Image 1 (cartoon, rainbow, N blue to C red):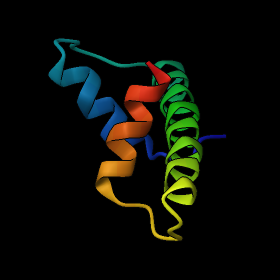
Image 2: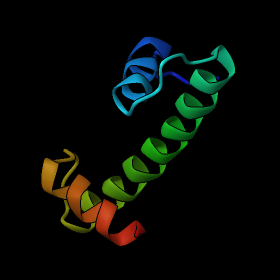
Image 3: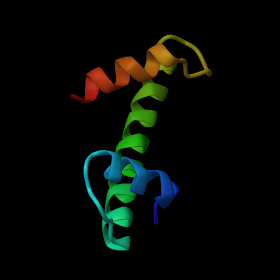
Image 4: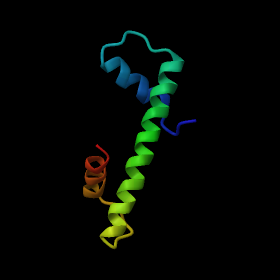
Length: 69
């Protein structure tokens, strides 16, 4: 189960043009976003470790996203 709340996910889907959003759709997108976020966080942690830091910075997140593309 995702740690990402369903309400913001539903808002994102609706802002993309959907009139209604099923519970299954909210859960499916939240699960996907959770998985992507975890992968980015792991890569950002690796980037910070290479820089000999314990703190993950915004630039680490940006670089992690680039690395994962």
